[in-house]
Image (cartoon, rainbow, N blue to C red):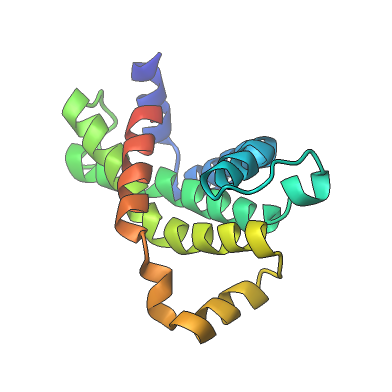
Length: 164
């Protein structure tokens, strides 16, 4: 099945892979938002709740994050795949498949890292999608948005390498 999957993805154009990635990410995060809240709450020693207003706080940033990140992973992976194949549709070697999908995930971390920071701040303290980043920049400077970005990129690279 994986062989057919990489061939199908190679046949899609950049717009098609972008839409596929955005939809996949948005659906995934909408379904998993309560679990994400519980994970973040447990890591920060916050009280767990079943209140949907709290469980889904930060959903818009979460959808934006996962939609954009996954949306970028598909076309970036496709671009790197074309570098390996010279644009030919062919079965990828295991190392080509891992490297192209890892690259797609790793590069998406540049967007995902800052958005996850905003999501976590919204989950903890509330606030709007515009207000939270403005407050973070005011309090800590723009460099705060780079905090944890490398680790986020590594996580996304590994995640993408294994799901693609």
